[in-house]
View 1 (cartoon, helix red, strand yellow):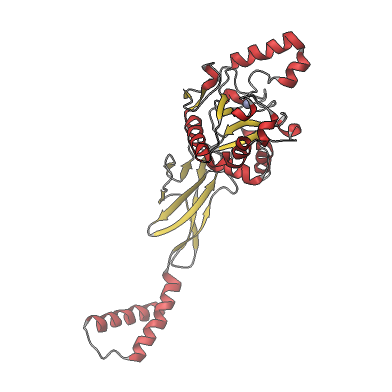
View 2 (cartoon, helix red, strand yellow; view 1 turned 135 degrees about the vertical axis):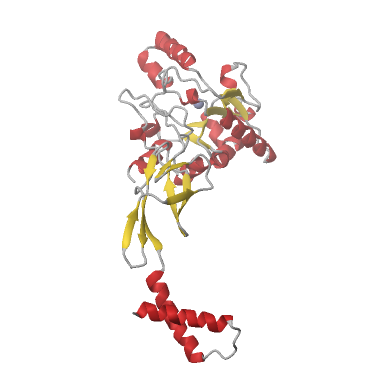
Length: 334
Ligand SMILES: [Zn+2]
């Protein structure tokens, strides 16, 4: 009954307004306003909730969505069909009520997705984490060797046949002639070029020394140490084949004339080493083996060894003050 009155009142109001009549009764107008606000309360439909997985999601994961809508009769109902997704992020795949994250999604990537149902819209945010426990098999071999956020250390090896398929020769000054180690994966090489040229603007002259290192090269280095000095020495000073981050094609040892182009702890105190430690993250690199963290990283201080992670993740790791291992562990506990 009340609704009928409302409709008639609105129709009357519309008639009065559309007639161009200037003698609209003030009382009537006030009355209409009051009724209109009631109208909004009772008829506005809206998305009141979206059921998405809580916490973070992984690269390649399929996320299923349900949307709860408050209906005209003030009842809520869950819907699994009939809505659409919009996102500015490329490579997201949508089907029915499913969102699939790109396989190449990196830890700390963020995807914003707008969910529309009829004229109603609401945004959700998906945060990516590729936890260590989910990216390793029972033999300690990582399952995501091509990912820019892969974590390689003495407990997490690359497959022994892994060779990045996008290695290029770096375009920065190098000091060793070996063609293999002058390579990096394309994105890391581009980031390195940018970093070196910005460093030069700050009057800092960096030199690349050793980048990609194949499994075969690691095996021959390691076996050479074992033959010459024994297993214990080899394990202390050389990575077991497959455990060198250099095999990712995302790590580069950097030096400078100030340390005679050697890999030297003192590099960390030079103008070049200080610049690198303070700026590498801006280009997507971190100093992978900080001082005093051997118990965590497995390596003594290496101020020269940078690892590409992409700008977003590298910056977050840098800001956290943690090693990459510790940073990943904090994600695991989320
Ligand atoms: Zn290195």
